[in-house]
Image 1 (tube, helix red, strand yellow):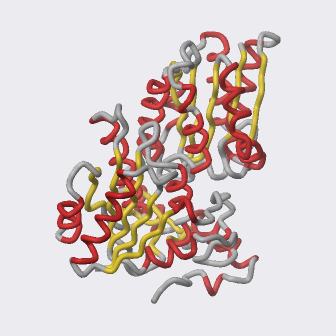
Image 2 (image 1 turned 90 degrees about the horizontal axis):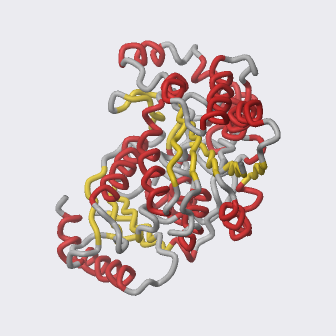
Length: 182
Length: 222
């Protein structure tokens, strides 16, 4: 399985980063092919909502930055994992900026998906989605529900499904197994 | 009242979010007249120095965060602003946070998920949650006539807010309409869309840019 992992941590926070590295090691041992992006090391500009990717250079952002590599990897993966510590109850702004720049991979045109109006698919297939978070000290059940619900919405918009949502509290080998056998 | 309006749209001064916030503000001004100290800022122009924005939040009584829905939640730069408030956690007591959010999708339900987050965020930071004004189908807000019903409602909402300090629930519901469009009506609208307003809006721009034939490009396909 081809897996793209986006790490939205601001800094090497120690435990979460270590967890991700052990997870990648386990996933690789299970014959998965991993593309790992440490977002803080990349140039990611804020999407300006210009819609140039829809009406000027269809399918490509008109403002070049490193997200082109992320979109290419994502579209050609079986699974895309958003990994991030929670900060004030949500995944980080670095990760959000990378997600904002995903709109070139869909059409501007509308269609009905899951009984709602969403954007038409540009590609034939899209990666399944997974979310891996690090909890804050005060993270509660409601926070997890809120984050999960938003990423379920992202999955509908990206014409795919959220197949797992987990935290770094379990051993990485166990999470790797769950990801590989989702 | 010291009111700070933060427009979190990456489009800045050309944004629908600012148009909407300004109509709400006009209503507030009409009822408060001189009893208002106001600042409106475009986050995209200020976000290089986020500490200046957080300082302004620290001295305001009420803060209205206005932004568009970006991939089912707040734009990254708005999340960046929220993160910068981390150090103000617990120091925002007595301050009110209000939100005005909108999206291009015609159904307001798309906004309810981030709305739930915003309510939790205000509480987590120790601010009072004043409510959230949500409205779908607003990609064209900047082209609306001042007399349009929805902009009038934003003004009316502001006027009542100026008088009572509360967002009127009935008006919030009217502004949010349609929360959800019946499936059959959506299906008919979209079946007609190649000739209808949705596709035409994009096709006109694709043609003007000479790239209509490339509209189905898949540049990353391997």
